[in-house]
Image (tube, rainbow, N blue to C red; front, side, top):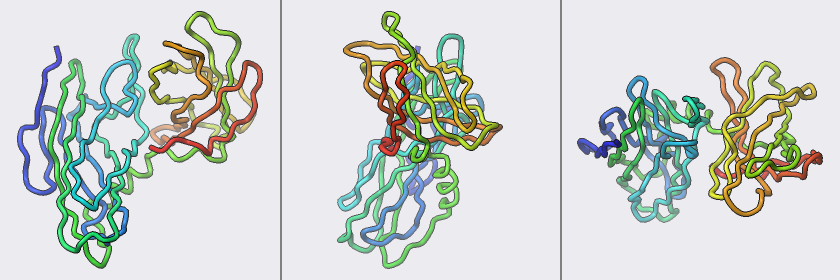
Length: 285
């Protein structure tokens, strides 16, 4: 049974909030910013050993972390930028997780007429932390940003910059394309995905974004391909309606501990018609 957990305390500006197995804090790339700037904010979650939280598509179970902003007038939060996760396979379940820690990035757009002085930023976080059992967690967090005539980096600027490099890039120049491999078998149909790569030693995978009409199954197979290319086979399960006309997600390449991701939105070509489709329309994070 899931045990509902709330935050244990809410401190002053910027300190971590401790839940059962996760510490949460709101951090900023800058201590001081100018009106009209865009400032990167970030939610830093630090989990106990063997515990994890979830990506924007949690997989066959789990729950994505959410951020409910209480932003002051003149500050407009953007969408969460999600670093590439890990894939966790347990028995028949596959989930996409963050273990140890994760930094979820959010750009904050400052109004050009924002008055000088301190601005208090607040948000309510909700997440699911799991080991052998799962516990819903929540916490209020806060941070202070000074509005002035200059830009001053914060003590967390390097941490945020390091995690910004882990956010998947737009899949421009990959010549990525997808096509059906034969006819459907009931509510399942095989899909092939291919893209260009200069990293011959890497392993490859596809982490899909979630859809209510269909599911790109998490298990993929790497297939033989031409030099400089990766080709994967995945299976799509349809829930309702027609077969999807496109898929979106992250193409993963990994060598040892080094992982890179490219975000794509790919039209699905008919079976046997592998027409290259530009991935320059990758979804925003």
